[in-house]
Structures are given as structure tokens and as C-alpha cells.
Amino acid sequence: MTDLLSVVAVSLYGVILALLLPFAGHRISLIVLAGRKAPRETGLRPGDVASSSARSRSVAAPRVTVQLPVYNEKHVVGRLIDAACRLRHPPELLQVQILDDSTDETTALAERRAREWRSRGVDVAVHHRSIRTGYKAGALAEGLDTATGDFILILDADFVPRPSLLEELLPTMADPGVGMVQARWDHLNENDSWLTRAQALLLDGHFLIEQKARYVAGRFFNFNGTAGLWRRQALDDAGGWEHDTLTEDLDISYRAQMAGWRFVFRDDVGVPAELPRTAASLLVQQRRWAQGGIQTARKVLPRLLRGRFRPAVKLEALVHLCGHLAHPLTFALALLIVPSAMARRELGIDRLWWLDLAVFASATVPFIAFYLTAARKRGRRAGTAVGRAVGTLVLGAGMSVLLSRAVLRGLGRFRDPFERTPKAGGSNRSSYEPSGGHFRGRALAVGAGVAMVLSGVMALAGGYWASVPFVVLFASGYLSLGLGSCPPFQGQSGGQRQPHGEPDGHAAPGGLRPDAAGLVGRKPPVREEHESAQQEEGSVAA
Image 1 (spheres, rainbow, N blue to C red):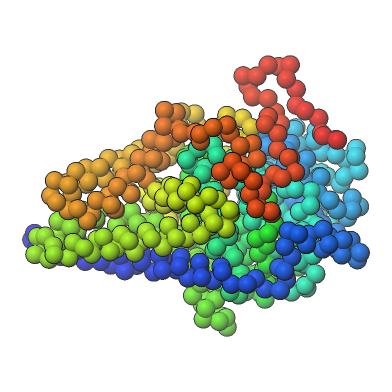
Image 2: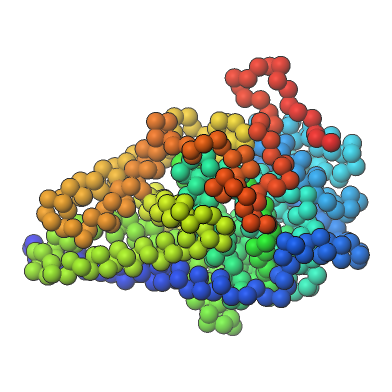
């Protein structure tokens, strides 16, 4: 019986590794692809923006609708509306829709801000729904019914675009085959803590390597839900917004590209945004992405794989849409690290101890290389890049236990509600975020971390030295998320906080500086409950 259990443990360990290692190899392929030269339409670099904008003004400017989907965003809604209404575009050709599903004072704040901007000649209106049918997708679809623009710019509540955003993106739409152009995300608050620094690098890897690689290689890639400009016809041809998945952006991206529309990624155009500041906020976002990604894979992959698309497109779509399956596989690997080492000794094959070290290197080195490359592209110092890459790897390992349930629910056809990512603006925390650092799954993260510590003790006591690096990685990830959300563990970055989120406290390369126009203030647009009643909301800046 003991031999049978040992065989099962070793076999499961081998199968999981065989399934996970291709994901690591895929990271290397993305690094290689991202190094290719971008297609002709993105020959626009930051230094060319002024001339391209002048050329775009020399022809008839198109009508643009800016959609701002919001839900209980009292800390950031004023900032968002101000930034949207400052976009440089002929006023008679600009429409701003505030798609508001709020149940708190956000609606009144939005109405007040909209009135102020209308008095200055901006076509801006609040569209309030009392029933959130379809959540964000439903709000966007309803907004399209009254949208007058040929192009639709979508901005989430935590984004603060520079006034030049439309001038930078619209020239790409001169090609009638382009259905959507996506800008990269920049980070307003990356130096708040280790958690925001790790997220910043995680997103840099996604945009500067993943999105760039898929784009330059002619593979399908996705609209990221915000900071993207759509051609209205592409949305219509894709069948419009649907809310049968939690990632409506990923879903419509694939449907539009399968309908023949081409997407463009502009890595030279950045839109600053707020990173989730706590583990609770981050996990709301990541659970939605994980469950929705699997739902979208179930929905669109059968049709895509049957379609007449290039094999490379199909393969990349398969890896992209199924990527979240790595979370439960990684968690299972963590649980099996030490038991499989013990099983190999029981079976008399512990001379293969070096295999664990080889596997650890094969699984981690590609990801570290991936994030170091992203850090280099972002212009970070080499010394700090290594530490941030390790921190990002720890965060990814830690999330595996907390996102596994979301992946399984995505596979199980559960219809969970759309949970918005809490946004704090300049306040200490979002008004709808639980206090005390508590979040769903925190006990599980701490329990998994304690289990890994015990596994480490067993590994050291039994001489399973090759298993120790794996154990340290996962224990650090689980405990960092589980305990790091508590106030005593919330590490702040050294020195003064960087208000504009510039990497490492020094000027980033041209085009990569978030909030270069200084649009973000230090105070939230509304007062907190504990602030003096005499502190009133600031008026619209001149």
C-alpha cells in the first residue's frame, strides 16, 4: 500500500510538472517575439506624436464617445470626469457618457461635475441605471444605444488619461481595418508597498511583453477593459457586449478578431491608473480575471479552433485563454513537493534529487527573465529590478491558492456576480473595502503558508534539500498575502512616496512617465467621513 501511494505521489508530481513547464517555456517565446519590430502602423513614437496630431487635425476629425462605467466610485469619480472632459478634441465632436450604476453618493457627485463641465461647453451626461443588468457589460451596451461617436474610448474609474490621449490613438484608426487600439497601463501608486510594486511589474510584463509579442507576431490579443479606443463598427460586427462571462472585454476581443477586425497595441502611449493597494482589493480583481478568463475560453475556443485561422494564432489563443489553469496546478505542485520527495526515497529513486533543483530552475528562471525584461523595458535600475522580479514571482506563487477556486468555478459554469475592484483614490482605503485587512480566503492563504512551513521543517529534518527552494517560494507567497494584509505587515517603500508613480524615484524614459501632465491631486474628490465638514469638494480646475 505504501509503495502504491508513493507511485501515485510521484506520478502526480510528474504529470503536474509536465503540464506547467510549457507555460514557463511560453514566457521565453514571448520575450523573443516582443523583441521584433512593430508593424508599420505603430511607427508613431513619442517624439512623433505632435506631428501625427497635426496631421490628424488637417483632415475631418471623427466623432468620439468617451464611456466612463462607474459603480460606487465616490473617491475617484470627480478625477475621472475631469480627465475625460479635458481630452483634446473638437468639443462639438466629443461626447462623454458617465455610465453610472451607483447606489451611493457617487451619482450626485457625478451629476455636479457634469453640470460644471456642461457649463463650459462639454457634451457630458450621467446615465444612471437603478438595476445593474449585465453589470459593466450591460452598462456599456446600454450606453451604445445613445452613443453618437464613430469611435468609442472606454476608461475605468481608476484611470487618469492625459489630455493628448485621443490625439495619440486616433491616427492609428486611419487604417479602416483596425477595430481597436489599446494603450498600455501606467501606475500612479506603485511605490505604496511591496504589493503595488509587484503588481506594477506584473502589469509591465503583461503589456510590454505579452501584449507587444502577440501584436507584433500577428496573434490575437485582448482589449484590457479600459484605455482602449474602439471602432463602433467593430463592436457591432462582434455582436456587441455580452455578459455571460466575467471578462466581457476578453470575450468581445476574440469575437471581434474572429470577425476579421485587426487590433493594434500602442506601447508608446500610456494611461496612468491606480493599482489595488491591499490584498483584498487585488484578489477581487484577480478572481474576476481568472474565472472570467476560463469562462471565455469555454465560450470562444471551440469556434476559434474550428475556424480557418493560422495554427500559430490557434496555439497562442489556447495558451492565452487557458493560462489561468496554471493556478490550481501550481497549488497542487506546492502540496506535492515534499511528499513526492519522500515517495522517491521510499521507492529507492531518491538519487534523482537533482531533478527538483532542475525543475525549480526551469519553472522560475523563465519567469524571472520575463519580469527582468519587462523592468528593463520600463527603464528600471538593474539593482532594484531583480528584487522586484523576485517579489512578483512570490506574489504569483501566493495567488495560486487563492485563485484556484475561481478557476474551478469558471470550469464549473457558475454564474457569479461581477465584483468591482475597490478604488481608494487619495483616501486611506476604498469606502466599500472591508476594514482590518480581511478578505475572502485569507485564512486559506495563512493555512497554506503554515502547511508549507511545516513541509519545510520536514524537508530539512529528512534531508530533502532540493525541495527547500520550492517550499520557501510558496511559503513566502502564501504568508505574504495572508499576513501582509494586516497593518503590522504593510511595508511601505523607503523614502517619500512618489506622487506620480515614477519607477525607482527617478525620471522614466520618454513616454513611460505616468501622470506627466500632473492631473492627479493628493486629495480625493470627496471628503472622508472623519474629515471636517468645512472641507468641501474642490471645483473643476481651470
